[in-house]
Amino acid sequence: MDLDHARYPQIQWALEQYTTDQFSIWQLCGLLEEQGLTTRPSAKRPARPLSPSALAKILRDPYYTGAIRYKDALYVGRHQAIVEKTTFLTVQRILDRRNRKGDRDIAHFHYLKGMLACGACSAEVRASRLIYSQNVGNGGTYEYYLCAVKQRGKCSLGAIRMDDIEAAVAQTVRLEGLHSAAAETVRQELSTPMASLQAAHRELKENLRQHLIKLEAQEERLIDLAADGTMPSDKLRERLNDIRLQKGAIKERLARTETHLGSGAEKVLAYIDLLESPGDLYASISPNIRRDVLSAFYERLVVHVEDDAIRLQPISTEVNDAIHAWSSAAEATNERASHVPAEGSPLSTTKRDNLSIGLSNS
Image 1 (cartoon, helix red, strand yellow):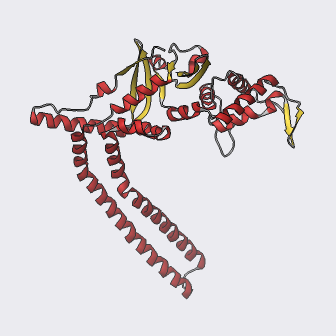
Image 2 (image 1 turned 45 degrees about the horizontal axis):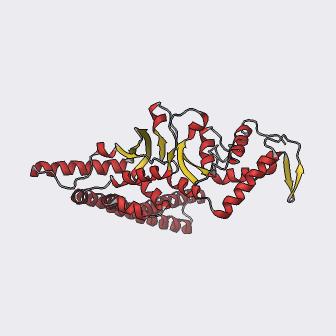
């Protein structure tokens, strides 16, 4: 039984890093993905990044100490150990302790997982994520974010306190808000195209139903021919199978049409409702729901630190960009018509893209 030499240095590194008690399983998964560790490909599944559950199994597996498990007993294996038993036992103690007390970093890392990118690396045309970490000192546990490649000495961005990141993200979400008048204008302008879209869906649905009726009539005629024995059975079977396949395809399209009939309009209107007061909503919801809100607004958030302040550069989703562009155009039209700038207007795209939040001194 041989070790996979292409993967064992990364697994060895992960086990050793976990003994520092400064990394969560989620964080180690991110770092291992950065290093290119994947699952073994198979005939049915391609190679993919290691999942947290898969990494947890690796951290619990005594195989990497040179042992094998058989019927709940450990025996000395013939393969090479890649970690010392003391390292493995330290990993087990940390896993047991975190399972007992609940690991807070998993919740935080999950809610911002994949959303935060390093601005320093971005400036050097290098993609890297910010990951959660913690440090236990005399004053308690300090939580912060750092660049994934900083561990390998490839990034100059320092550690950023978790509270500062969370405050910057919350303020960025608040700046997404639309002025109520602008939101209502967008709703009104959407009503006509949405009505046309729904009418087109209804027409398509009716056409599909008529086609289905015709196919059912053809099927009945073929069954009658089969009863009369006036058509060869092979040809009859072929035509019946063809008609039944067409009927199945039409029923699938009808089901999709039912689903899509109002979903497009509902999604756009839901975005507009969300954008009227996103800051208050974001502050009142749980971390898991916050992730849904962030995913609706942003592809990712690029974090820059300049002059002791955090600047977030939002990379917005297409829908979010489109609604803000529509709102800005509607507001500009209204202002030109009245020659009076609207009070309480939402921040411009430039201001949304250049929010700065001061860093904590502690």
